[in-house]
Image (cartoon, rainbow, N blue to C red; front, side, top):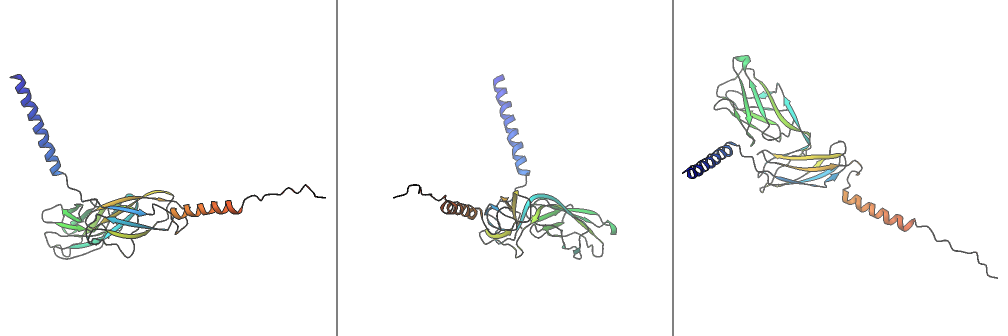
Length: 257
């Protein structure tokens, strides 16, 4: 009987543990599918070009490319446009933005309103702190929008935001957009930084993210890849061996009479 009770308690404990695990998994927000990027070359000099090839991103989506470490960013007292219940729109001062990191604060207390926040869902949309309020955030351009449930036309609003950005924005000026398969190819310029390893991050407007590592070496002349440098070094060795050999000196000490 005691053995049966022990088994019953064991099964009950296991069932409860599985149930709790299922609940935890259910409430964890699902992350967007991660893309992938490759760099060519993987070692490059300052202000030189690097090709970024990306796959696994959203179809026909704009892509932003950041260079370096993630940095905490913030923008206050933003200019905005909109009337009625919105959408109201504005833009932060730095981009691209790390998906899932954006928080917009709307302060209408100067006109008898309230302070509300819009939290980044990680997929380019935001959820307001009160029912019915929603918004968007463009990770590539830093542009945001938000709606409200009441007409706030004429009420001065102070908009501020916090987010995570990257040390440098190296997105090509012409912009980058994926094709129908979610792939893209873009050329970035290495910023002026100290030698070392740096993370290159690509994000799209849907919240897909991919990273790769670039080694910056200022010794590499602009426009030359590591492969070309190795080839030139090999040629230099061959040339020096061929043309700088010590000449053979003939022994002319014997004189014929």
